[in-house]
Length: 72
Image 1: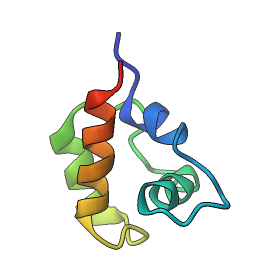
Image 2 (image 1 turned 90 degrees about the vertical axis):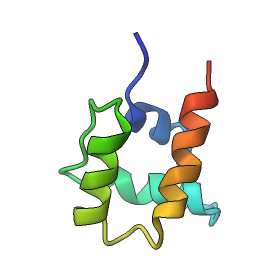
Image 3 (image 1 turned 90 degrees about the horizontal axis):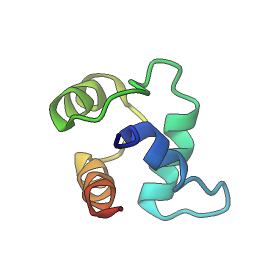
Image 4 (image 1 turned 120 degrees about the horizontal axis):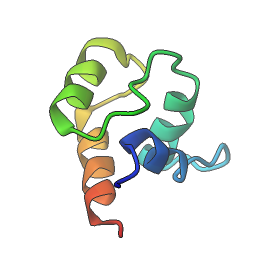
């Protein structure tokens, strides 16, 4: 079974890295409401658009999502 997007995103965390996906991961870690079990694009995208003020652009999510899809 595929890991959730959140589980993947946590592998990108690095508090000392200012690359956009790393910053997204760092901030998502502190988001108590993040849909941690979700594996589908639409629910994640909707959640982030409505709730993730820490995400400067949905392009960052799109990049992270592409990385998620490309992993083994």
